Length: 322
Image (cartoon, rainbow, N blue to C red; front, side, top):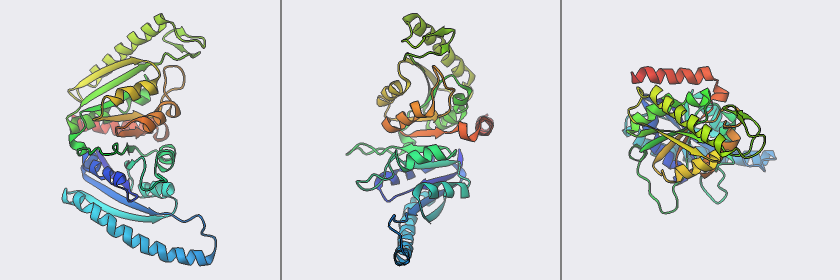
């Protein structure tokens, strides 16, 4: 799986939940880096404030290191190589810098952290991470109040991968299949026929800015079912349990509804797709799923990494599986 994982923590119990996912996504020789950030206060305007902050920073750095070292103990007991990084600065900048310094190929973080400000919520640090790094990001949503989740290795019964018909989306298939095999889960391919009004031509049918006709939607649905079947046949050697789902409607809304009845699922979502009808783009689908889904979501950024780089990762996993 992934060979260098960075897990940012902010002191909250929801952020600490991301530690459970380290063993699930780690290879035998993976290095896991647990990091904390001492953020610079916005009112640091004078040398007097700077001196005060320097003293407080040193105190916080030591306290955070000791606190994080305790969290690392269970991971080390499981045989993982765990490093600790305590950095000072802007949270997003420091997480990205730490990930690059450790050659991370996965960042695991929760959608929000401690306090009423919910500073590490999606729309702040996590949202900035999604838009500013090409490193795959596993986004963990905290459980609803009062709910206790079992550890990840025992909770995934499905790995769901949305496909929009683009080759970029398909490049995530070997990664999703590898995760499904490790979890003993089924791999679910989902293709959604977008029946919203649009002007682009799809499968030889143009809606001309109006809602597509029933005949057009039926044609698109039939083609989508054939597409999902062909993809399932193509990757059948990667995982024994592959199922296909075809739905009609707004992609983000349909995905949210599907995930609502799959609380033990993991979503593997490639954010790059071709613009136009029946194609999904990051701002239109991925971000909505990340703000509404209650299940963990693995986000890949092939538009930033480039298809060749992600393809190399996928090919390596195919070779390992064989």
